[in-house]
Length: 422
View 1 (cartoon, helix red, strand yellow):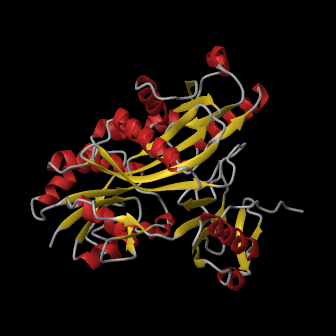
View 2: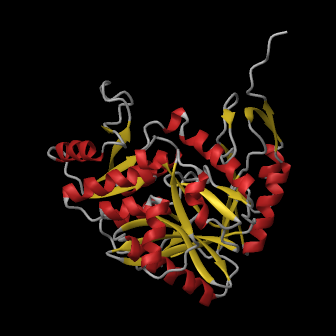
View 3: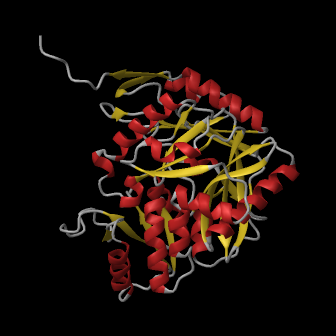
């Protein structure tokens, strides 16, 4: 049985999707997860316990396991896991993105520098330490601009500022976030550095693809129909195919391939984001990992003899060295809505779910929030209430179905603030 080493932060939805695809293919997944080392296999899944802040230790643990279990390929879900996967693949002699390339791709600051050096269009940018005064970078500032922690994802800490006062407020908020307990184990450069860059107007798109020995294979381009103009940047709808001319889509793919090469990414999945305006394609990121959460359910692929192939199956086959020449995306338009969070609070209950599921075109709704769970919207939080999935003949029909389904949902919350004494 072929074995694939899968680095992941949790055994959540994405891990279960890969596990199901692996079982269908007759492939064994060997997990490497960030968990307690003092307990002997507490989840009984045979996972290798690793620390995402100890890449050398993780590589040693993987090599030790490979002495008794041959590893045939590497995959990762998430930015931190991708960094470990790069070092492990290098130690095992398996194809994957090089460690230096993954480090550059998962740092917004290094990404900007690499893209600028490659001659790609980038906004002006400047970095500052978490404790630096704004005056240290005042000479470079223009408005509007965007504040970003260099190592966070899912729009956490991303805030638009249109004036000095709003920039000061944004920086204060980002500093609080970076000093929060849940980020204490993040690498120091992710906690201590803040990027300020020019706001790039325009429509936003995402590309899902794989690099095959340096050559980009585009699996899908997603349109994001809701404007992302700030002050915060909570993503909602992804839909494919995008309502763009084929020449424009080829331009996006070509720019993304150029960006991946500039970062040094070589082999494995990539999830890339860009903005499109009259000045061209502005690459926001090229992450060395697949799309996160449950969003991959919006993608299905086909061959001449099969339909309904999942992204997870495709990536498993790619990790084992199979060429993907015969695979293409399904003919139908498809999309997902990451259900936005209306306000901070503890999730109490939900009404309207049955009506939301009956909207024509809607294929499924998964509510990931649990009763009593504290729900925090961006820029402080990085999760969603759930996901809505739809398929239809055309892109516009998918967008309409997602919006109608969401409109039927009614979430209620309780305040998470403690009551004061009388």
